[in-house]
Length: 285
Ligand code: C2E
Ligand code: MG
Ligand code: MG
Ligand code: MG
Image (cartoon, rainbow, N blue to C red; front, side):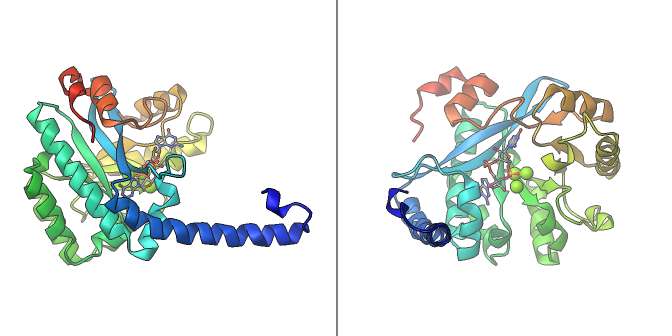
């Protein structure tokens, strides 16, 4: 920052902290405006089943095409939106877009599920399930094309009312996944009581499995536990072939990570993973 030149070091540091807070407050204001101006978009990252070589699920990941910044990633605004409560409006936008996309894919014969991230604050809203069902109905989205990703810490704290709602959604075909498993301190015996189809193992649990015997032991035990409860395992954050080799031996086949594919736009996803060139002509907006 040129305007800081000639000042003392400590002062620059303070200024930058203040700027960061200012920046944050500004982003927070801009987020709600950005929603009205339709500045958000979804990217999709495939989960690949290496048993068949096919992508079966696309995780929807939100991005902000801010007019004055580079594409803003969710790490920079989702936690902030959770704090301010704006996540409810953002989550509505995401859910609406996901349901619309699922309906269009279904019409076009695309055989892929779409997984959507639900944050703690969203799920805690008394009318969350009402709004979700409204989005599904509005677009006539097939529930069997949807998957909800709920973080591990949240899953462990869910009250009976939310669990009942999740059970009802599952009856309708919506799949429920626990996200970022292995990052929290789970009450493992509670896991079996949850209405959950699959568990996504966090990348921190697989980072070192190719080089560390201890990491391998832990990962193998976690995978065994989940499978033993009759749930599917998806492994996130696959960055190299060596990790996949170890995981295959452990018994995993569902993988998501940069090594397989980075998150990408809808049309690119369809072209690469769903063999749907006919959809390429459709307006992405
Ligand atoms: P997540 O749900 O655990 O999503 C996976 C994140 O890991 C994504 O980051 C993805 O791009 C990244 N990733 C995928 N493969 C790899 C890999 O091989 N290595 C590494 N280092 N990273 C990988 P992204 O898109 O920046 O999203 C970050 C988090 O933001 C998500 O973590 C999720 O918690 C949250 N998020 C994203 N979209 C939404 C949304 O629509 N709603 C809500 N509530 N949260 C969202
Ligand atoms: Mg996720
Ligand atoms: Mg995750
Ligand atoms: Mg996460």
